[in-house]
Image 1 (spheres, rainbow, N blue to C red):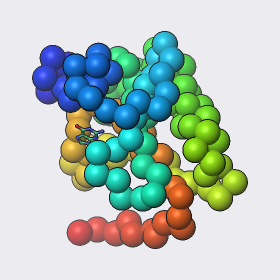
Image 2 (cartoon, rainbow, N blue to C red):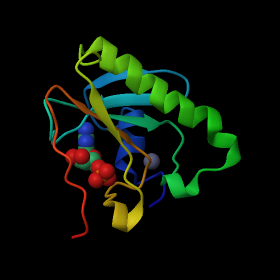
Image 3 (cartoon, protein in one colour):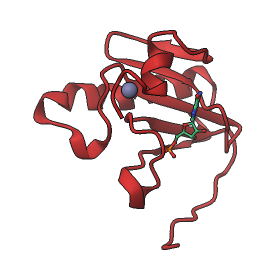
Image 4 (tube, protein in one colour):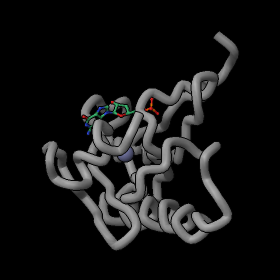
Length: 118
Ligand code: 5GP
Ligand code: ZN
């Protein structure tokens, strides 16, 4: 999928609505439209990179920023002490549906571990 038709690029460019929680020069974060936890936020790079498998050496700072942004948002939303999960799905087997990297920040309740082959 090109950046032109990408829904997350459209959200970043404010062409599609979303509940934006955080933005800096490299990343943006908004609430997931179909939350699977009391807190479910997606942290995305502003640059259209389809998946972790497409990351290059030059993206190292960006990848660090994704995690640091998630940490800040968790603090802002009051889930930092209770804990949370950070999830990156990669490609088909990883269950990735939107081909623009997104770090899921999941929390607000104790969450199950349910990773096994289908
Ligand atoms: P994936 O399965 O690719 O890791 O996660 C994609 C996530 O994007 C899903 O949790 C889905 O609910 C969310 N999502 C898909 N379309 C939209 C949208 O238009 N807006 C928002 N805020 N989230 C979306
Ligand atoms: Zn995109």
